[in-house]
Length: 141
Image 1 (spheres, rainbow, N blue to C red):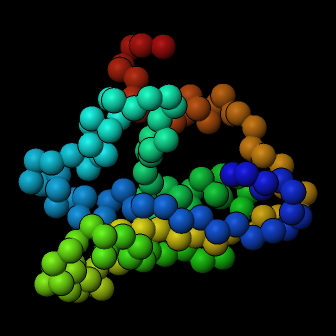
Image 2 (image 1 turned 120 degrees about the vertical axis):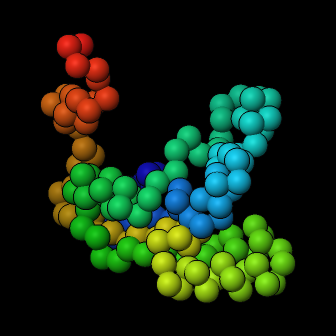
């Protein structure tokens, strides 16, 4: 988050793809990957510039709150609908489903308030251990 420490009490706008949008869910159900094409990643030269991980709206809010921000607005919207779904009929059906279930829209947006005196979050070994506790097999330390 470039420049985040320079404005006292500033407002942060975060947008990103929604990891659980309808198009990605349907792709997975059809046996396709919800990640970028493997050759794009495998044949990449230099540092990978794509997404390492995409988040859900709740995860995006969690990260901001853990870093001391107050959520002013959080929601979903369509940023990629026109480019990802060319047929008009498919866009209409997709939009109708997403009106009923907004969490299936393709993109996330959150506006957060930075408190005065904000400092970047420090590493927390106890929080790390707690987060990993469920993934470590019984009897392993």
